[in-house]
Image 1 (tube, rainbow, N blue to C red):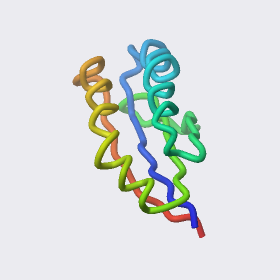
Image 2 (cartoon, one colour; image 1 turned 180 degrees about the vertical axis):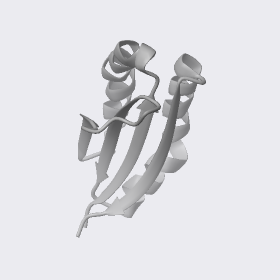
Image 3 (cartoon, rainbow, N blue to C red; image 1 turned 90 degrees about the horizontal axis):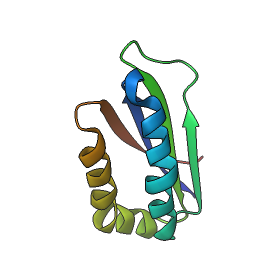
Length: 100
């Protein structure tokens, strides 16, 4: 059973390229360095919202223990990086999914 932690981001159109660079050069490498995810899927949602461009980041964990460790020991550092760089220019929400 794989556990997927999905975060959807809606970002302001004016920061799209800057945000993508940040995600690719800073956020995703830091996430990979934790070595907790078995897979990381970063994608653009095909249908944008009126508020901006929509992206999805899915982190795949093989066990609840990996996912819980990530939530309690790593997520705050990642979220702080996004907040520090893009306050007021995005909204996001997260979902916990279980592969069937």
